[in-house]
Image (cartoon, rainbow, N blue to C red; front, side):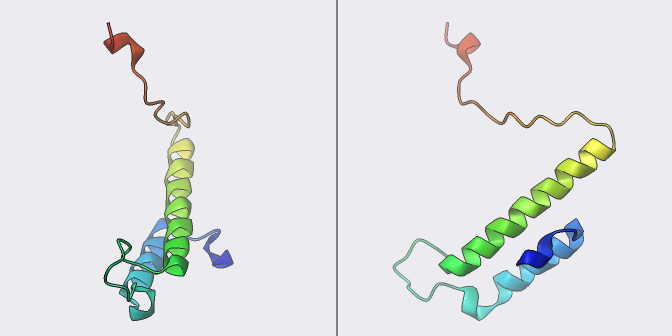
Length: 80
């Protein structure tokens, strides 16, 4: 999975669909809450993070403001 660096978003989405389509990546334990195996989940997570970073870099290249702070979970001005 070290080959995800430098890939386009379209290539990464294709890789994600390929992993999702493999029967080896499906969890065989029907009592589990997980759809995919641990290894498949790790790969999908790395691909998702790479897609997010590609989108972020694209926004920066277009001159858009990118907020990396995330959601704090607290909106104190609404708790009055």
